[in-house]
Length: 375
Image (cartoon, rainbow, N blue to C red; front, side, top):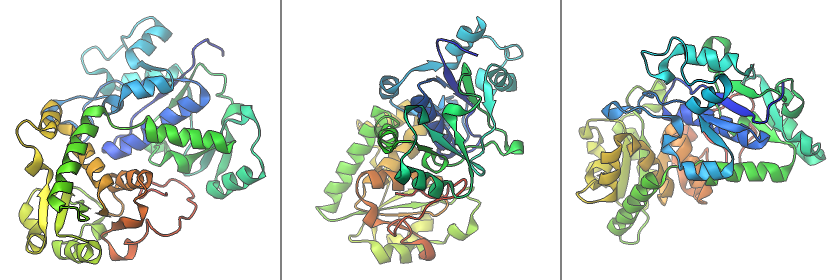
């Protein structure tokens, strides 16, 4: 099958924002690497990111100008019209397009739906530009860690008009993994370029960046030139009870790394009294404390309260010292941002047995990996 335009479509993960983010990064970098147009998913009320009854497409939180400059993008509606002559999907007239199961079946029918699984398959991209050298070949095999190597440029889907990534837990089709643990590039320079795309183009939109920058400046002022600490304490619906520790455990962890009394707290714990043991010793600051009238933060949260968690990730990503929650994908992205900023040596976890995991020498990852990032 041949066509002048070629596309990548994908179904967002059914989990929270950072689970969704991992899958969309994979789809975006796959599209960039294969020269295909990325089809932006239709808007929906995403899990835990739908305050004020807002619907979003996953890329609504990103700077689309940068993404567009990096490669072609189109909307789901425009894609459907291009491929079928209409943006209407039969059976979806009375509900939001993104939440209609018929849309997913339509996208699968219009494409070569790949059955690659991060647990068992490892993608190799860019062999059309040349085979990997010996060093890169060893690196690919090391990171594949026994998974099946898939040469994307020689796969049967290569000439398809559209390649589609489905999400189907029953078939283990869930891209809950980091792009770099699921695919590698045949040339080292292409791999570096792809990682730069992830760092420089797949980043939060300007309003989120500016709100976070304002808060970071305020925290620097409050710290009077000393090194303040940020902590992410995951509570809520977190299923990993070992990491859902009490306040005294958090206090002990903070005591082991904090260099000043100012602590910024990012948390989904609704009762501030939970942090009473820390408040007796440290000066605690929460995001709500800083959303003052006329601030960029207030303006951002009024425009979309769902930006709050993303603002907090950027704040924690810039803190001189950071303590996060093991197994949390929210913390995971913070640690990647800190890696970009050169803050790996001051990045820790609350759980004692994992406290120094991020600053230790990295090990290759085999299979689907989501619980932390690897610098």
